[in-house]
Image (cartoon, rainbow, N blue to C red; front, side):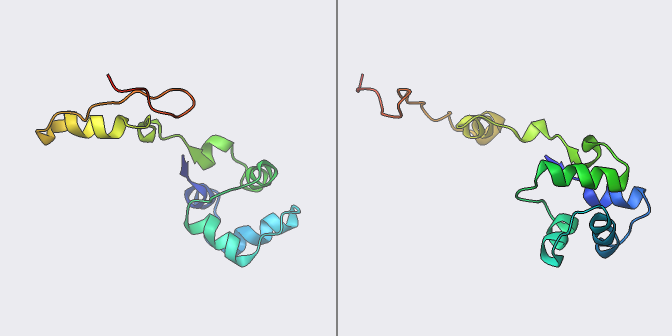
Length: 109
C-alpha cells in the first residue's frame, strides 16, 4: 500500500503537518510531533483504524484517498527469484525443494 496523506491533505488546502495536527486534535486525535512527522513524510508502520476514521473526517476524504493499493508489489515467497531468472539473467531458475506443511523438508528423492 502506498500512503498518500500529504497529497490528500494538499488537495484539501492543508500544506503543513502542524496544520493537520491541530485539526486532528480538534477532533479528539492528539498525535505527538514525532508520530505526526512520520505520518506526514513517510509510510506509517502501524495506524489504528479509529485514527484513520478521524483523518478521513478531518480531510473530508475516503480511505482510498489515503491508501493506494500496489498489487504489483505482492509476490509469493520464492516467486521473486523465479521472476528475476525468467527476466533474462541467463541462468536457469533455482530448483524448488518442496517442504511439508509443518516446515520440515521432505526426504531426499
